[in-house]
Image (cartoon, rainbow, N blue to C red; front, top):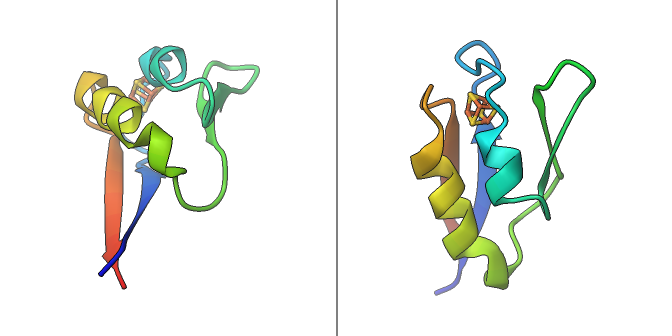
Length: 70
Ligand code: SF4
């Protein structure tokens, strides 16, 4: 069984701290107002640990990981 992980953002809860983009620049950039833009699609295997760190560091708990099992 394989797992696909995908970042999901709660745009209402996000307060634009930008911590997530600092911790996971490979998948998260900030728009001109400092709000995150997530790269589409599943996380590459090598980024799962960094993604978990970014989720844990979000002070607004607005970032999460969706896990899909195939
Ligand atoms: S760390 Fe959380 S609150 Fe800050 S920009 Fe990222 S998702 Fe939004």
